[in-house]
Length: 136
Length: 147
Picture 1: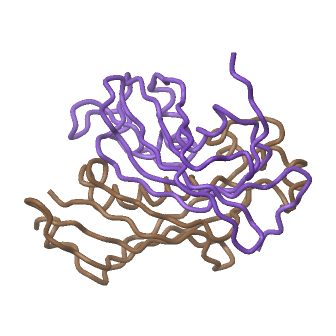
Picture 2 (picture 1 turned 135 degrees about the vertical axis):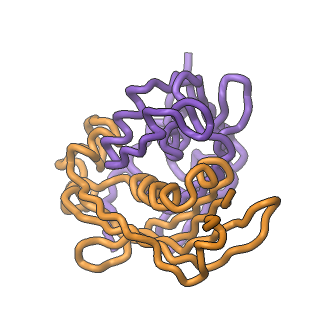
């Protein structure tokens, strides 16, 4: 079945689960002193309980969700807009969610618009937004 | 010789521009990023619909996000919003750089923000990713009260 026909408004995408270890944060952000991402003492001085993951890690997770759905149509022609609404700390576990909210013709294909969000292990939303991409 | 003043809300000017250094995208960059975000899509190391391997779409986003570090010493900050338009995949072997321009700054609920529009382009100047981001400034001598 063509992808455009397989995607329906209201469809919930398979969620992703991500463990945010300090090691992964270190590789993502690069280790340096006086960084709220990799220097725990500095993060505490700045008012956080420990180091934080960059918000950009959540955009990467949503990109994975969308690439699994649309493949090349997200890598070329995709969009992503997110707001980071709650800190994500080292040691947190995020689940990444998406629900199709619109499909519309664009060029020779269809643009699929997905409401996306990340949620921590306490059930709190940490990032919310919208992503879209094209079916072939 | 470049001088690096401290970034303050007052020093920041709407309309000022930033440019990064050029970065050669290597297979190791792509592999490290795949580890960091725990996403090992086969297109990152094997042929993709675009020919050879491609990078994770957000691989170069930190280059854009760090643009202000090319002119300022940044005490601390938080990323508030991010927008991407993925125009062409980033591929290993490309030499990419990002350009940015401050399009707004504002204060809300006692916090200071800057908004930057950016483009990441290849060595020919062809755009790969466009977008904009909003960053909160955490002034020196202050603490951020996480909400």
